[in-house]
Amino acid sequence: MDLRKNGLSAYKVGDRIELTIEDIAAGGEGVGKIDGFVIFVPASAPGDKLSVELTTLKKKYGRGRIAKIIEPSRRRVKPPCPVYESCGGCQFQHLDYDAQLAYKTKMVQDAIAHLGSLDSVEVKPCKGMSDPWAYRNKAQMMVAGRPYLDREHSEKAPRLRPYFGFYAQRTHRVVPVSECLIQSKANNDLLKAARDMTERLGWVPYDEKSETGFLRYVLARSNSKGDTLLILVASQPSLPNVKEFVSGIRGRVKNLQGVVVNLNPHRTNVVLGTTTRLIWGKDHLIEEISGLKFRISPKSFFQVNPWGLETIYKCLDQALPLRGKDTVLDLYCGVGSMSLYLARRAKRVVGIDSCGPAIEDAIINSDLNDIGNAYFATGATEKVLPRLYQQGERFAAAVLDPPRKGCAPEVLNTVSRMRIPKLVYISCNPATLARDLGQLKELGYQTETVQPIDMFPQTYHVESVATLSRKGR
Image: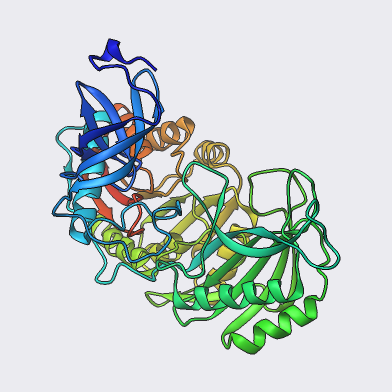
């Protein structure tokens, strides 16, 4: 490809260039420039001087891989994970932890200023963990297979030996992972036992093209006590030798609480299907955080980092000094992790979420904690909330905790029409957070502070808690 229009000589994919990394982009890749032409380089750090092999060239940018580190940045460290360079799960293991926090703070600052046009908003330094490893309570691994021959199989149709792993960045190639360093020890132990048993029993990985095999994904969930739940995602409801599988797992994993099979026979990127069947034990875990108990079922959303949830609770305490007569709204409430915490200081909390199983868990969680002033509604937030408004519901404060795509415009418009005085917006995506804060500004809300929280160390993801108040109260 000829890049002379960009002030460069003619380059093509496969060529090597020398590049100094200047910054980190929102997706975690390092950014360097040649005569104004941007090159993105994964696993690079600001200050790195590199020899880069070009892998992609577009009209406005290019992408490359590190061929050689000529002079490393002072913030660069050796990644402890043996598959870090090939696995797409983490992006920041090559940065020291202080640098990770600094760059996450900057990512949120840049998004708020440039995408939300909110230059005067205070973005506080990102809160980090004392130990940024082994924090995840949920693991989701793809199941793939290595071909090998035995007496019953030929070279044209070899048998597949199953293995677990994660997708390599920007591909559907599964990288084998024997231990994930950001997963809890309980999850790693459970996945290792499951991997050994699937190999021993000869369970065949599902192949979407040929529609052969049956095992698609393996999910492990754990709680703070080390209890675990195993979810097998399969293309068929019945698994061969399943009793032997469960017996083998139970013999190796002491705190295993249950094994379930989720049925997903469709050609889709969605991991979990609609039907889940209990094979052995319980179909859920009980987690306890900040004195609250939560039931976590296979399909329910729950924060993957318990420390991060506790940190969010502390932010709520500061942002919403509730009185016993206040009514609070919790949008995108999930299993009620925010609703139940707020209910201890409010007169009434109303939670809304589109996920039926999550709302079922939220109601059960209310009973688990003897909380009688939390009420939950199932349905799309942009449809349920306007109905509440028409019914005359009004609130002293609201918590918005949407998925990565952010809030639907109708949600923000209805919040404004309700004239809710105080808002807390919790987000895992700085871009959609900034977009929605900009929209809320137009609707009469002032963003006071944004607190980034490192819910996902070693990755480029960052949680943020924004505090807003209605202008002209």
